[in-house]
Amino acid sequence: DIVGVNALKKNVNVLCKWNTNEERVMVSSNAVALKTVLLNIASNAVKFTDHGHVEIDVTLNAQSGTARFSISDTGIG
Image (cartoon, rainbow, N blue to C red; front, side, top):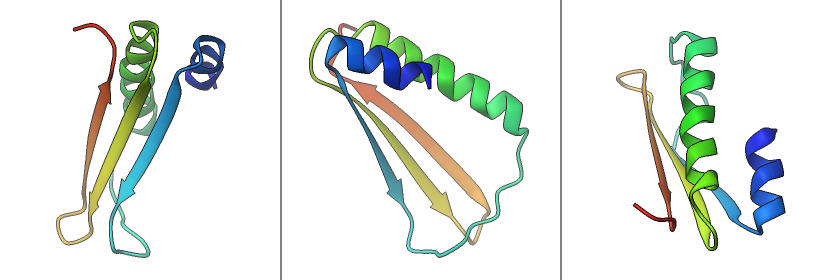
């Protein structure tokens, strides 16, 4: 994907952490919109990170059927 390619060019590590104890979690969403938003945020994180890493945390909650996404980086801002 474009995030990984750009990170590789800049020697920036992209880390993804999945936080759940469940085998399966059903989350209902607009997959296209969710993918677009996450790719835009992750791409911007890589774009403005000259060294270090971008970390994507995904927390899934089976009881509520929700997912929480958090993207942090060592870049400016």
